[in-house]
Image (cartoon, rainbow, N blue to C red; front, side):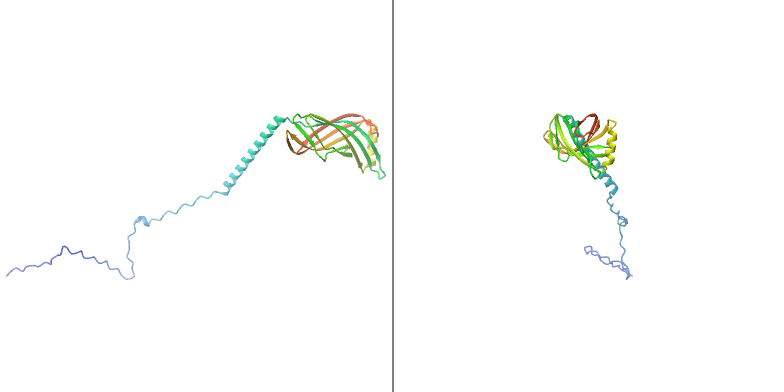
Length: 247
């Protein structure tokens, strides 16, 4: 019996490969996909910018303000020191030359009327500073905190190292005339009557060619006179004057 010959199908080597059919997926299911592990990890959230606290900002503002203030004070102090060394400022001085009572009497309404004539000397001891005496200066005479009379200081300019004699007429009226007159008469019997002479003078200081803003010279002279006789020059037994500058 003849051997049966086996026949094998011929394979075409040049034919393109047969595409493989995708696997069957049941209806209603989505194909699973493989995601890299790196993608599954949560991405880090971006960092929020740090907010500066309001207290820190406030502290910086205070430090800046204090620094500026300190710098301004240093500049002012240095300028004042330089001006002091250049001009060597000194307060003006005053002295009472004479005091005359023209009138001192009781009125019908029992008020006291007084009229004094005062001669004073104002001295400017500064070599490089002039003094402008402005309008509104006052000179007054007091007895035990009660004003007897007052008058206006003249307006004038006083140059360097200058002495100026001023004649000032003072008038006044006090409502407590009877009480005040009795006290003056009793004091006159002792031969020593204390009086206060007060000065209030608005002045402007001249430094070279620069005229500064107005300030006030306040002064008080403690006088002791021998009598209050009218129409006679009164002897001044003692005087003590003090003055200060008010900005």
